[in-house]
Each structure stands twice: as C-alpha cells, then as structure tokens.
Image (cartoon, rainbow over all chains, first blue to last red; front, side, top):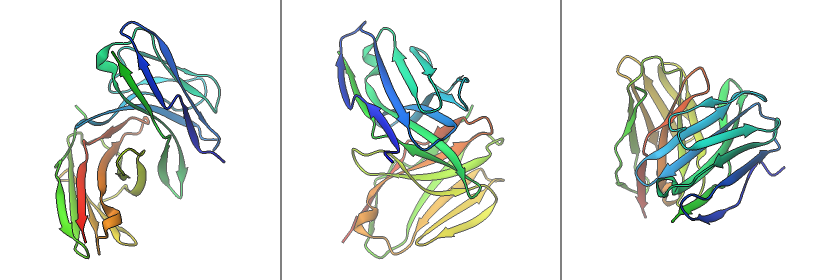
Length: 114
Length: 110
C-alpha cells in the first residue's frame, strides 16, 4: 500500500515548455486534489476532483489543466510553463474516516521554470 | 473571499511547555477545520479536525473552535523537540474546496 505517489520528484523546465505531473493513489478514495505551495503562501488549491469523471477549479487554476483518468489517477498539466509556476506541487486524496474528511498528501514535485 | 490567516511565527517554546497556535478565517459558511503538521521538506500530515464549537482533544493536542468569532486554535501540551515543524490551519467547504493558511513555524527548544 503506497498511499499517494507523485512523479516526477523534481523537474526543471524552460519557459514555454509543457509537462504533466502524475498522481496516483491506491486507497480507493473518491476525492483527489492538486495544490501548490510557495514560500510564505501556504498551500493553494489548484483543482480538485470529487469523484471519477468530475473536476472543479480551486483557488488558482489559471495556467493549469487536469484530467481524472480513473479513480486512481489525477494528472496536472502545464501547457506553457511560466517562471511564476515555480513551486512545490502536492497531490492529495481524501476519504471520510469516523466522520472526519481526511486528506493524505503525496511527497510532492519540486518544479523550477527558468 | 475565503481567507485563512495565521501568525507566521516563528513561535518558540521550551520543552514541556504549552504551545498555542491560532487561526482566523473570513468566510462564515466554512464547514470544517483542520490542523496539519509539515516538517521541512516533507508533505503535510493531518493532526486534528474539528467541526463544531468547543474543544476536541487527542493525546497532547487540543483543537478549539469558535464559529462566532471565526477562530480556531491548536494547543500542544508538553511540547517536545519533535513537535518542531510548521503547522497549517485549513478550512473546508461543503464542495470539497479547501483553503490553507500560510502556516506557523514552531520551534521547541530542549
């Protein structure tokens, strides 16, 4: 049981390049999330998916697209990377345990855009 | 606007003391409240969740919620050096939206 996995762990892009961040969970959770974390800014929600086949915008969706490929996988795509997208990206999945909505985070992807 | 405010710290307490972390939120329709701990270079992990006014205790941790004042706090009793981390306050809404504060960095000195 690996929990939430993310690939890659590190990535360097040039401005204008595209890439997809991959996320998978093996806990059979319905909900999945993508966050970015910048110094002094805390975590900001980019997109979330409450269930397979649905996605919704979070606080900072501009410049990103997502795909909920199936119940396990939720990918984040940067079509044309910009230096402002340099950040640490966390994927999370959640379930309700004993009445508590519990989010489990992946290890993160550290992205630098030059 | 869904804003979550925390004192960025750093907050420094001696080992064995009580650490008190505070958080305020702006949107009264907030449904659920969480405290996460994040060690440097690691991902956040859930410590406590609270949904109704009052106190909720779990071991050395107590979460307190006051919806009228739009205020949630976390008390850590008998603080240990291993509690040194950044603590993130998060507010959830009934559509799976979640907003985090910037975090408070806590240092527990031996």
